[in-house]
Amino acid sequence: MADKARIAILISGAGTNMAALVYASRIADCPYEVVLVAANDPAAGGLALAQAEGIPTFALPHKGMTREAHDAAMEAAVLAAGADHIVLAGYMRILSDGFVQRWAGRMLNIHPSLLPLYKGLDTHARAIAAGESHGGTSVHLVTPELDAGEVLAQIAVPIVPGDTPATLAERVKHAEHQLYPRAVADYVSRWRNPSWLLAQLRARALALPETSEQKSFGSAGFRVGGSKSGKYFAYFSERPHGHERIALLVKTSGMDELHALIEDQPDIYFKPAFYGASGWVGIVLDRPDLDWGDIETWLQRSWRSVAPKRLTRLMNIADQF
Ligand code: GRF
Image 1 (cartoon, rainbow, N blue to C red):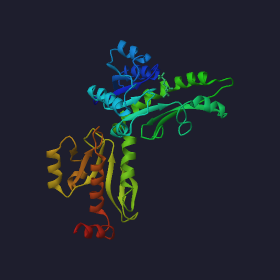
Image 2: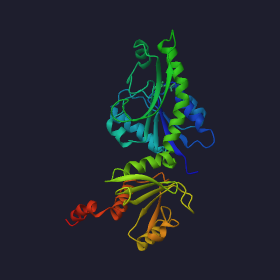
Image 3: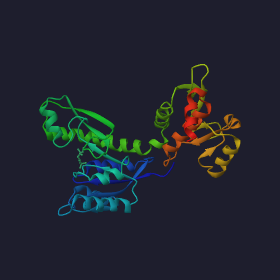
Image 4: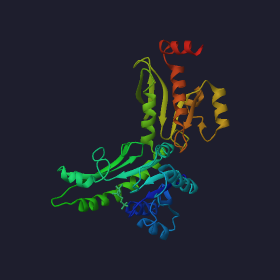
């Protein structure tokens, strides 16, 4: 298995979600490890547990500091710990836009409601007052707008007769302690999840003009042109013949380019069985540092090399200027 993701957890209080994340990381095969627990309150209960577990901690009260200065100190601690993701677990601070933007796609939060319902504070009291049948919890990506980033996972939790905000909060926490470790694990390992990779590829391949998806020998393939005269320009291969990795097959300009690619970057490019003989290259997709911009470029090139003239003519003219 590839190296584990390194997460820093930011807390302000009890840290029960932090504890759930830590203990899930102690189960074999968990794809992340906790490299730092940081708090804006030195009295945060979770810090003592993190210390007892041998996890580095950092605490800095925000009082008397600007938001930017406090965020900068927290971020410096996160970077010094070598974290690649920030996981907010009851961190009761609004973060500055710059901080959030630098960690876009690498910062998660858990919020005790079924987002997009009940953003902000007092979620349980508001859900009960509104007569909802359920409260719940959501894990989402952090964006500058509060509690508005993409929702990654949710659990609905029933509201029972006689519930108070405190009793509901306690029940929701049981759900959170199951949900958060799983959602974080899925998120940090999505780069090697075949369904996620195929969905990413599909969105990009089908964004090109006159494309469709059609299976070929059990693999997802992408074609350009009509249903009879169309041609394949890309294949998604979960286990390419003779290769262990998940890959995209696309057309190169020919054997010279194919061999040059493989020689330069043998960890990324390979010659696929059967297709390789006609200049197709395999590109390994299950890499944590995969650049989807590169994949888009390859899809466009391959599309263009097989697309009907009436579709490529305008592009060829544009290229001359
Ligand atoms: C959780 O309910 C979480 O959804 C919210 O703050 C609470 C933190 O609780 N953001 P704990 O400190 O993890 O016990």
